[in-house]
Amino acid sequence: MSVSVLGAGAFGTALAISLARTGQPVTLWARDLGDMAKTRENTRRLAGFTFPDSLIVTDDLSLATQAGIILVAVPMQSLAGFLTENAGQLNGKTLVACCKGIDLKSGLGPAEIIRRACPDATPAILSGPSFAVDIAAGLPTALTLAVKDGHALQAALSTPNIRLYRSADLVGVEIGGALKNVVAIACGITVGAGLGESAHAALMTRGFAEMQRFALSRGARPDTLSGLSGFGDLALTCSSEKSRNFAFGLALGRGDPLPEGTTVEGKATAKAVSNLAQKLGLDMPIAEMVVAVLEKHLTVKEAAEMLLTRPLKEE
Image 1 (tube, one colour):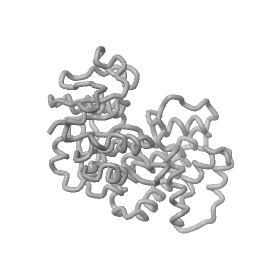
Image 2: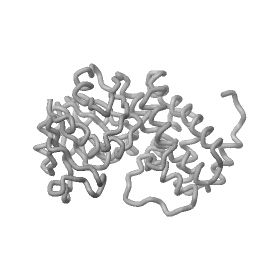
Image 3: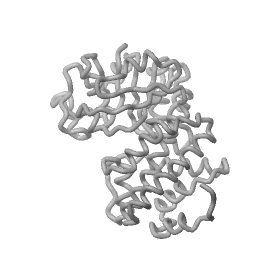
Image 4: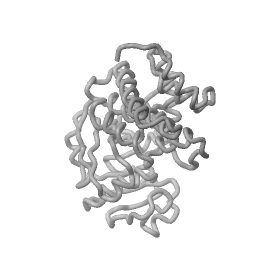
């Protein structure tokens, strides 16, 4: 079955390159093509990687949506609007969300947004430890594909450097991908503020507990967060400056100018998670700390003190 990738950011471009290297025709859609069709490279978002011959680039959405499998790689906070605007061309397709986060306006994850905007589509989630530059370079990784009855889709989207594992737990997979970005910002703040490697490890561990607590409250399976889309993605995102969320937190912690022109999904997701946690009566101190620092209600020092002086309890 033919495949299209909608969204030519770094990750969408990397997925399109990896899929096209198998020799199958793949269409990459961009709202603004720039010089990609001419240079056969995405010089703005993923420079240095030539497009395979079987990769077609276009700004014609009607052409791209002719594929039966469509990977939607638009930013999380743009997903609902994009799907609603183009539902006529997307309904009835297999739509694989490649963004990670929770919509700030609705509090919904990608799967439910797909269901509401395109009720006749088959929703799926692609998540796990992956940097665009590694995928484009052909380096190996393993990802989780969350979808009901996904054997055929798993086979269609697997490539020599991307090993896919199936999961039927769409809620757990999307929550793992969303909340690890929030924890990554917190870890970046911790490292940037010079609080030490021990504090970094402790915060990542307690962040993982927070992710599990939130996921279970939303009906996720207990074991999903221990897999690639939870713990795996958390380990990668919280320990590398290739992670936009970690790098953003690092700049916050250091007091450096914040990165411009990059999508930092964890910012909006932290606020969305905090809002939902308050409604559900969930204790989410790390997410709340990230929001407080982003909204300048607390300094980095005050936020660290807030976490360290919380009431003592059993792990």
